[in-house]
Image (cartoon, rainbow, N blue to C red; front, side, top):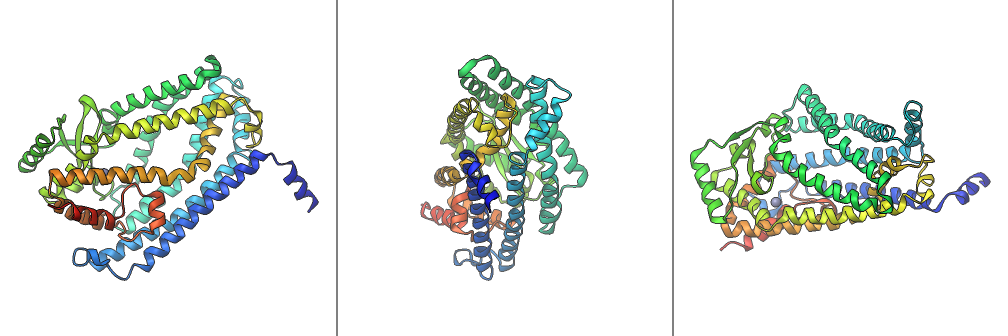
Length: 425
Ligand SMILES: [Zn+2]
C-alpha cells in the first residue's frame, strides 16, 4: 500500500496525464467497437426497409458477419497498440533502442538519430505484420475478397519499405539538420520543408510510385470512353488520361479515383468497378469524383492538414526544451530525434477525441460531391451504383450511429441514399 502510494505521489503530472489519455482513448475505442458489433448483430436478421428488394438477405447477413469479424479483430489491434505504446515509452523501449545504437554510433549524431527512428519504424512494422497477414489471408479470404498471394503480399511489403526509406530518410535528415541549425524557430523551417515535401509526393505518387504496385491500361471500351468524355466536357474537366487499374490483383473491392493535380491529373477506374457496374453507373460514380474535384476538396483537405501540422510542430518546438516531456514519458536520452519519435508516437492519444470532427468534415465533402453528381448525372444511377458497391464490398447498411459519427469518412448508406433521392429531378 505504502509503496504504491509513494509511487503515485512521485509520478510526474505529465505521466499521469499521458496514462489517462491512453486509458481514455483505448476505452473509448473498445466501447465504440462493442457498440458497433452489437448494433450490426441486432440488425442482422432483416434487410432495412429502404433496401428491400435491392439487397438480398444473404448479402445483408454477409455484410454483418464481415463487419463484425473486422471489428472483433480490431479490438485486439487496439489493445496491442496501447501495450506497444506503453512498452516504447514508460516501459523503456525507446531508451533501450537509443542506448543500443549509442554503443556503435555517436549519441546525438545524425546517424544515431536516423537509426533510432528507423528502428522504431521497423519494430512497429514487425509487430503489425501478423495482424496484416491475418486481415488479408484470414478475414478477407474468408469473405471471398482476397486475391493476393503470400508472394505478392511480401513483394508489396518490400516495395513499401523501400519507398518509405527513399522518402523518409532524407526528410528525417532534413528535420534533424533544421532542428540543430535553425535555433528556436526551427519548427517553422521544418514546416515549410514538410509542405514542400508533401506537394512533391502528391505529384510523384500518382505519376511514378503507384506504378511500382499496379499496372495501368488506357480504358479500352470505346462507348464507355465516349460517355465519360462527354461527362468531362460537360463538367469542364481536362484530364491527362483515362485508365483502368488492375485492382483485382489484390482484392475484389472496387473503387474509382482521381490522382494528381495540375498537369498530372488522371482518372483511374479499378478493373473491378468497370466489370461490375453498368456504364451509366460508372458515369455517376465518376460524376461524384468530379464533384470532389470541382469543389476543391483535395486542396481544402491539404490546407487543413498543413494548418494542423503547423500547430503540431509549434507544440513540438515548445516541448523539446522541457526536460519533463522526455522524463515523464520514460526517456532520459534527450535529443532532436528522440523528441521527434516520442512526439509523433504519443500525439495520437491526445488528439483521438478530435476524430469525429475530421470525420464530419469528410462526410460534408461526400454530401457536396453527391449533390454535384446529382446535377451532372442521374442520381438514380448513383444510387444503383452505391447499392451494388455496398453489396459487393459487404459494407454494412446498419452501422452503430455513434461509431459511424466517430470514424466514418462517408455518410451511412441510408442517409446518403435518402439524400440522393431528394435530389432527383
Ligand atoms: Zn467521395
